[in-house]
Length: 266
Ligand SMILES: Nc1ncnc2c1ncn2[C@@H]1O[C@H](COP(=O)(O)OP(=O)(O)OP(=O)(O)O)[C@@H](O)[C@H]1O
Ligand SMILES: [Mg+2]
Image (tube, rainbow, N blue to C red; front, side):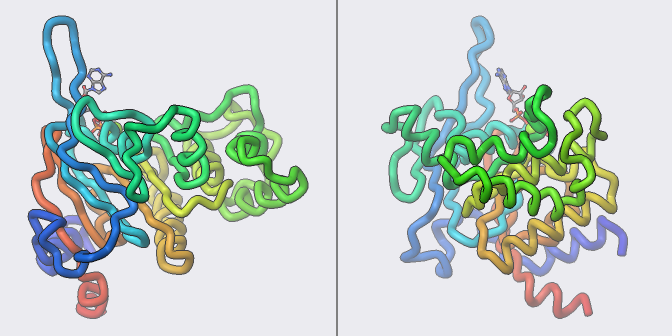
């Protein structure tokens, strides 16, 4: 099926929900991550540029949220805020009901390290560390038993198909392989939340599909909360909710009725 028609059908069969607060299904539940009137303003000399303008968004446990938007719309900026890597210029961010703007950086780093696995747009692999060492890096901050840590690292490299590249440095890997190391690393601490910025951006379509299926399985079988930002419409097929962002604002939010969609696809 052509990509565009898949996306059109997905959009057609979703309930349009301009405001997450209105949805009865979510009422009474406590969001895992909550953004309230969040702004991110960059100062460029004399000019202020609002990369995000008044974002209200709630993410619940076990959701698979895809944030869609064109280049420059604020997706990575939003991702950094959702992952508590950056603080807003204005507004509040709550993680598990705690206002994170009031936390010390060391406390924030600890919570982040335990709760969130990041798959970054730029990989951020350490060039002097080999594949296995890069994967194990997040575990160093968790006082994990070294033998168990190594076993987990090897298991994750097997999952992403890189067992034979354990000793390679990032410079000795292809772009897609580096992306897969970043994915294995994001899973090292077995975090409940995975944030991915264009996770398939540097991959051929076969490897991209493999990684996506893998993330979808983590969501379905292990109940992980997955948040992906992308401009790739194809990723919508895995989402339970799609957030459309444009010029730093949420344009609309769609709840995807996946069961119905899958049923009618048969
Ligand atoms: N440090 C910064 N200083 C000034 N402007 C910035 C800074 N970081 C981002 N911006 C601007 O904020 C806007 C949003 O950037 P962001 O990286 O969030 O976009 P994006 O949606 O992730 O785009 P892409 O799809 O190309 O990755 C852009 O116009 C960008 O130029
Ligand atoms: Mg980006």
